[in-house]
Image (cartoon, rainbow, N blue to C red; front, side, top):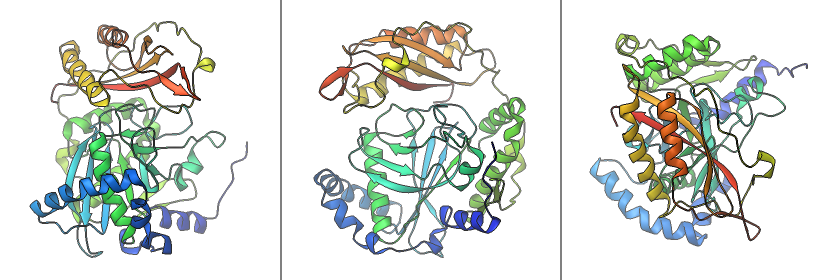
Length: 399
């Protein structure tokens, strides 16, 4: 297959829009009335009225000006964290407002390259959609695939529909709690209304200030060395922001590679620290009772864990804590990617550890999943249907 080649000028133009610093963000006629439109939606209006007072108090406590005219979102996959940075003048430096804990994770380190790989993308994106009617409470869509992804992904099936959303279930998105997505939605709506059409969302493999996380990344790159140039560009962008507290300048060349400012990283981040042993995969997977073609691909209502999403988060947190004692000697963290089927009656009829963990840990997690109580089943066109979900269990010595 012959790949389509784009002129370098076009790639640079695409990149300049995709990774535009708020200094140069455009203001559209639509964005001037964006907040009024959002408030015309009963669900969003109620949420804004409920959240604004709390956000104003939090801004005041941190000596920040409400509402923020510019926001910047940094997400760290391995660390399961999302930082929210704000400022009010283009010339100001960003200040950290809050850090959210990402409550579920799909896939592994490395960029997303095709549909169905369960990967959360890595790279430089911006919010291109506000969805108040999301099945995951609320969601903010990202412009995946971006200019780089379109050149490096599987051209026939690059995938899409990547969101920051509520709930704690994911198949390749970035889920936070319902309360957190409400805060972020309000912050982003105000920023867009004030003229920030391109709200940057940069997704990094790890927090490069955390030596343990960097060590894990280095071990990953020993196995997948084709990602070394990619991760180096991510690292450069990370440290540019650490030094300047301004959006890092990023362009995309004709090969799809990110070109980032070369900021030397602190030596401490590259020092070798104690590193977990490589997790072993379970050699044999249980047989799936319902073939994928008979499972619902889209539903009107997602299944609900007994007691709701917050109860599911408590279940996941307790399970993660219980699994710490099953880490291999010298191992400090493991990600176990689970897939499980909730049938039309709400019963968990299948649970399989796709990757991560060791055999003993995976068996215990599978047992815990199949032992869950009855869910409220998924609904499509008025009928309950079976559906497959995915969930990452992060087992960490330091919670």
